[in-house]
Image (cartoon, rainbow, N blue to C red; front, side, top):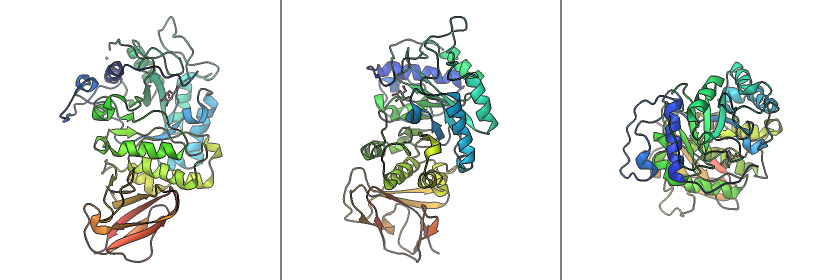
Length: 408
Ligand code: GLA
């Protein structure tokens, strides 16, 4: 059964995670400049994971939020085909990821491998991988740093080498590595570059050392399709923006667009915040039920371009919008650069429509002068030329997204 979350040895988790990655991908050296290291951080490797993958936050889909343990080849191949048919592949979505419950309950006594459940996966995981690769997409899988996964299927502890080799042999491109049932034990060695996501729920200050182990790491416990979750994870992440950059992403958890009763405005904020904080974006719903509005949100080309920018790896960060801007939690005003220039994102955290105002000169890196304001949601410039301050009415829980360009 999914969901049981035993207490976790964070030290063990970190060690298990760190030994697993060197097996999966021979690391290229990266420097670590953090001043204070203790606990897991002190024992995490100094060389980071493979630089052959994971430079940008992942864009894809994952089975868990949509189906939990009720997964099968057909849903996953359907999702991959929907990436193509819905235009999501063209928009940049790439990873089709299998979460927990893909295996049989005991390891193969002869090979020592974890075998896929033959009912759910009649062609094995490699058969799914072939179909996903044939569509020009990538495939992700799930394992766990402990003896068992969170749903009590076999975990990788003590079997890291065989599992890494198995996943690589199947053609896996991405590994989500969960945190359940971890005692303390390990050993290990290398192969195919696999993007490595530590599903460590924000424990052990993972943002301080996660980049030395993997490409992304969960910042908190599991998401829910609620406004309170969205607000709380943005609030958490905003405290750790320095951890975000190329090959290094705070994971705000898988997307809930299409699940629950989020308003359209809340779904826009969900997507925009994951974009401007450079979180992995893994869709988590049955995509055949996505509405036109939802598809428009997740396919927004300008927001995706910010998320996937090849030059600027950092997130947008809060700024003081005006001299007397109210202090909110999380902050409402963010600015950040992409290859296209300076962007401003404004979340209305309040429960009613409100006018939001920022001064151009308060945006770090900008000064006085005349500006054009381009709305990233509509893809249109706001008519006119602006200077001094800019004001906009933002609906409850919505996020405005702009590209701000200084006029010569
Ligand atoms: C944990 C993880 C979830 C999901 C489940 C699967 O709860 O945090 O994202 O992978 O396990 O059992």
